[in-house]
Image (cartoon, rainbow over all chains, first blue to last red; front, side):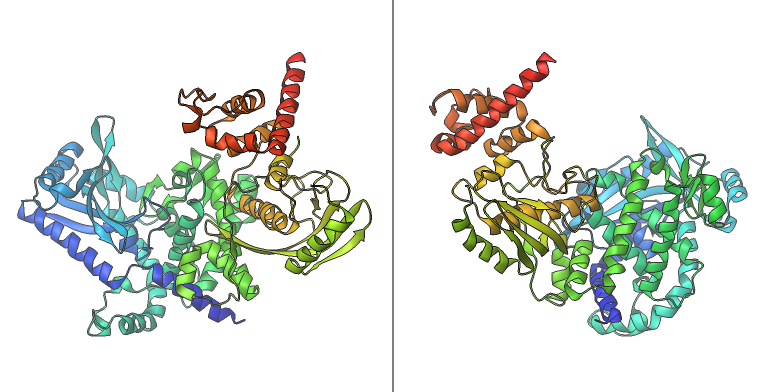
Length: 404
Length: 223
């Protein structure tokens, strides 16, 4: 049993769950042509991705979940500011031009939050682009945010987006570009360490797409930090799909990216993926103490641990690019969310850290539970398994009972 | 389904063949008891369990009592709600097991489909807070739910009506189904009910459960 071999095998699964260079190129082509179309129709807008495409933490949607698909969140930022027009006007402007298009009109679904363009499936998985219209935030609001922020330089990028509210649209503040800058700043040293070896590997595997290593877009490099986020996201998807209301109570990706990046910011950048994962999960178990300690004793015992905070009975995970956005808002409305979050984090540790020390077959059983039976079988064949587990066939399976 | 000293030997041999780490620690005219480890290696819905459990398997001889498991390895939380304080497992309702093995008990499949799945459900529940195949209510409601599955009824009330019909009336496919759908029995719950008409032994188990349930209901009403 070699732990490093096992770690490499887990990473092999994760790299197969990543977006492929072909898919990445395809997505970029699609959103640049949307930008071009808007421009040709009189809307001058900067189009940029937010969320996992922007951060390099995309994972393949869980194929067991019928609603799962790749969705690329795209901000369509017009050159105005929020004072130039109302939220409803902005929304109508972008919506009207897209709906009148011969190319996009038929593929559109209008949601309260965004306008979605649905494309043909890619390898059996749906692909859609969610367009969020936006304008720059006004100076007055930026000033207020700067005063509250720990990262005031990021506030320059703040935007206002229309939020549907009863029958109208109001503005809400968002800052995806600022968030990306914040994330990239933390990720840069991790990226530098892994870049050369990783890019060489991508190049070898995709000679038909790229002529030289230099041609590979930087967005396809994956650092230890990005890998840890991908591992957690996919494990989360597999775990929560089994729960009742799993979709409503699973930790949002913005929470995972934020807390993992903040925790990683105090770690030497040459750390391996698994050492970082181990470190991050240990920190999670420290934050789990919030469930049993009073707020005062937590602060006293764990000075400076403020990635996940509890103040006045409320959970707080601050969006680093928007001090008025508490990413843990939902946690305060449904107490099961935090409870499940920490239970899930414990399961990740059992499956991917503790399992590294177990016998071959036990290790494989844990990884199958983490990432799914077929995903592991596709990546590993029969490695680590002399015999396969016996499937349970639930005709009328035994349901536990008690006399009274 | 009573085990005798004569008919138990070959089943014990088979059981020890499938689970080689079990040994007989008691064998007399009342009970055969095995002790040791079993490996549970099963997968369902992307959850793979591979774990060794230490247990006692007790098989009553010359009695109608079902075999039972004692968690000698203390793998199950004491406050798990499908666990008796004496360490015995509540595997499934007795009637489900009796009906399943109406033509003869088979220790090997009982171990793999009831005992192993008990551990499997437990570990799944510990991880996700839900049961992979559901669970039964405790007591007689759980018994009614057993028949709900057999009869493919939508709830306990409908199950109860179907059970009463089976007890009191003959099967006539053209009669309206007692579930109230106004469809003829043969196009509704009839096919699921037929096994109770065809096999008197199964019908007797069901009627006994129904009588016990009615008795419990009337006791509650008197209180």
